[in-house]
Amino acid sequence: MDEAELAKAKAAAAYNAAADLFDHPVSSFWHRFGRRTVERLELRGGDTVLDVCCGSGGSALPAAETVGTDGTVIAVDLAERLVALGAAKAREKGLANLEFKTGDMLALGYPDASFDVVICVFGIFFVPDMVSATKELWRMVRPGGRLAITTWGPDLFEPANTAFWDAIRIERPDLLKGFNPWERISTPVGLGQMLDEAGVTNPDILAEAGNQPLAWPDDWWLVAMGSGYRGTLSQIGDTETLARVRGRNLAAIRDCTAIMTNVIYSIATK
Image (cartoon, rainbow, N blue to C red; front, side):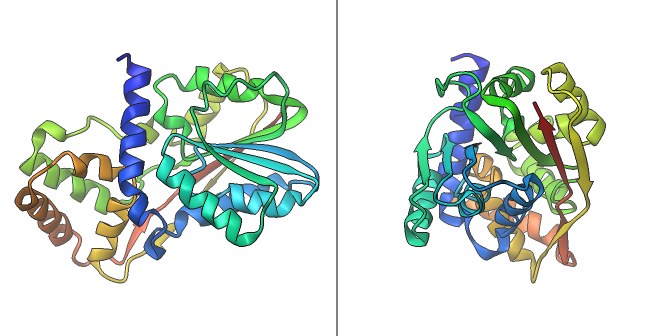
């Protein structure tokens, strides 16, 4: 299995495992930032939209509501359990213009210039070759259309993130990561450089500082279990070690009342 296939398999496994807590209220930021991305796009009625790495619909659902019955939204994710969550929400809301499907954003097979808007929220950094992935998304945008890529800013989920990996280092150093994938483009300059290499010119890039309140430390553990951290936790196996990781992590943030959720939005017109 090559690097790209391994990355896809790991992302799918992590988020399928995390699906049971992905939509927990403590992780409301998924949908908050998805909706914010859509608001910045100022979609029009009748627009055709492709939303890749769609999760359970954080951006796809508000996009479908905005483009109306004359528009269409196709939402794609590798994690079939998240796709199922999103599809259920679309049915509940009566959004017949929204289709959720399991798939790889790099192999969708759509012709050039198929969509008015292509959206990728918190997903582009999971691909080892982000430049090639962005080129593929850009290819599917029609002339005059837009590409929106939203990514995490610096210090994501701190101080809980550092406490998490410190606990992993002590209990299961073999699972320690050298870096988090989003760190490759966690500044406006870094994101801008990546977009430029992909041939995406003159993007409008906005960095926004933010945080997610925690009522108590256990809220962080729910965030971790409902996000990409679940991929690491799922590999621990035995419950005693997992309990020690949790205990060390939460003890280190016992006085923490919020975690950082800095975000960078980019929109480019073709």
